Length: 149
View 1 (tube, rainbow, N blue to C red):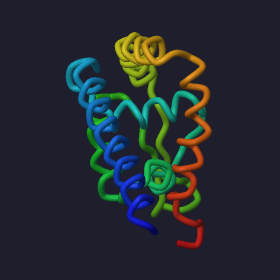
View 2: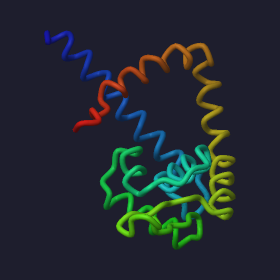
View 3: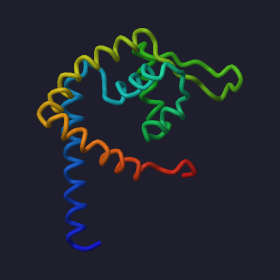
View 4: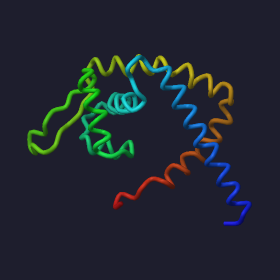
């Protein structure tokens, strides 16, 4: 890379990291008391798909370690937001599903953060957001690990 390309790359990632940090901070403060972004992410995925997932599948989906996902799931189970059951065919494996209380907690969290997200889109303008989404998706997919990794 040339110095100019290095500077461009550094500026891009500096902006991405700062935007990520600020967005996470703002959304975390808007979530209902006791809910973390990781909790919301898991509940949102389970609510959207409507399917059970294994802890390993959830860890892969969020690009976190199995240990980190186990911690998140333990907290969600303690709060009554997920059900964790054994796989009846393989006792070493478990399945996670969202509970009715978890669906309610997810809906409350979504209601609390939606105004912030809508405001950000309104301030940027829908056309600018639509224009940048393909670039951000391409950047993300370029960093996703191969399935063999």
